[in-house]
Length: 150
Image (cartoon, rainbow, N blue to C red; front, side):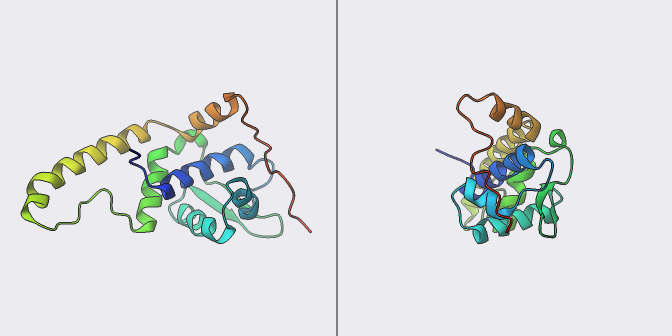
C-alpha cells in the first residue's frame, strides 16, 4: 500500500531531478516532462505550486526553467509532499467528518498516522535523495538531456 499520492511522488521526483540537473542553467519544464514521460502542461501546474511555496523558483526567458529556491539540504520530502497535497486539494491530513465515529474515533488515529508518516519524510532531504540517485547503479543523470532551444 502506498500512502503518498502519485502527485506527491511526482513532486518529490521533480524537485530531485531539478536539484541534479539545474546547474549551470535552470531545468526547462519540457525537458523535465520528457524525463518523466508526462505532458508538460500536467507538470507545469505542479511546478508552479512548488514555486508558490518557495521550494522552487521560476526563471523566465529563452534559457529559463526551474531551479531550487533554497539549498538542497534545507528542503525535505515532507515539505514537497505537503505542498503537492495542499495544491491538489488532497486533504490527507484532516479527515472529512462524516459521522461522530469518524470525528471522535477514526479521524484522530488517521491524523496521528499521517503526522508520523510526514515526520519520516521530514527527515529525508533533497540532498540525501540526490546522493542516493548519484550512487544508484544504472541511473543515468543525463537521460533525455536534449536541448530544446531553437
